Length: 149
Image 1: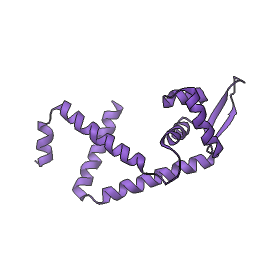
Image 2: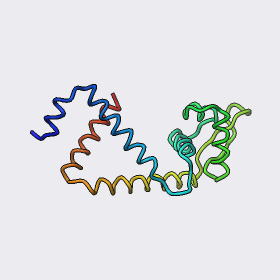
Image 3: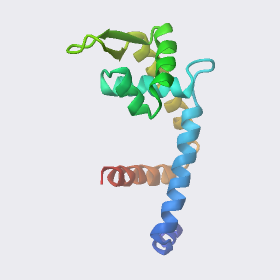
């Protein structure tokens, strides 16, 4: 039995929850900070990602998804549209509304961000031992299980 296994068996679930949440939060923050210099803000990137994942949304739906007020989303969308990253199309049933979706340029920008983040994380993982990487691979499976529950 490894030291980690012994420690895990002795760590109460509430304490483990705190340790995991803190580690995941810090890693997520660090990965989010890894992006090409001078590009999108975090808020713009989040909105663009939400559009890409959803396929298309109305401005109101995007504001709700991003948990911001519609006037704030209007400004974000204007910046993304100005850069050619999103496009507006007429709403199929409501002539007063539009549908937002990512453009090919927007998808390319997201792919560039994903590559930068993956390269940074792969570099950090390469610094670990094979045993540590195996442990993280198992932890990733377990965390996926927890996330799906």
